[in-house]
Length: 246
Image (cartoon, rainbow, N blue to C red; front, side):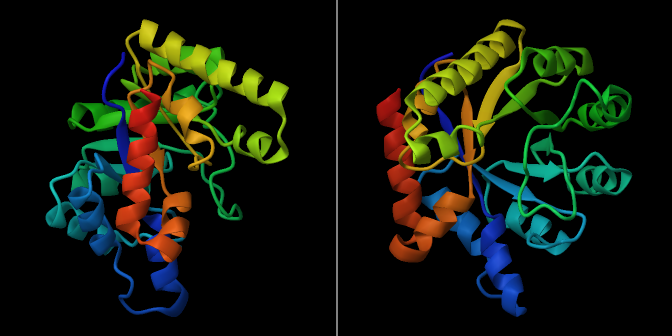
């Protein structure tokens, strides 16, 4: 798998800033419109149990504002399943979720939670929603995704980010190999591999160069850079870096 590498932009933290003070500003819908205008390929939004950033009402507004596909990140709960079935996003990415975490801390244990995940994956798939599992780049988790018949996996790249900051060349090489091997294994078995978490201007290119990857989902870093340079500039620069890596 080569060619165009899709960029999905997670707009959660526009809503985080909005919710810090209350009211309606800044509006994550405006962020989605900007992403669509400057070459983003999709919008990712995580509706958490505690509604700390994206709100239920944001989902329909985002879908109405842009034709970009919506990737709804969700926990494997009955509440979130019903919300997904009501809003019918293009894709639903099932992620682990703990109320006390600041952000998603690792991949879903698809192998250990098969019986919990199977009916949710089936109901989403039967409704025509493309299911993705956010997992560690681990053969055991890829095999679990195969058993669950998930068409997509998103590989957790967050463990690589601290290695770049620490200049750990051997660690970076090992982690890149782990991600590349998992992407190749997924693609070999008919699963489309995506990747995301902790990606920045400094570390995105080695990940983007992995030929089997079809999509990167990036959020917190882009919204942080947007504070200084604007969201249009941030998305365009990330898009240019990804294209150059291919």
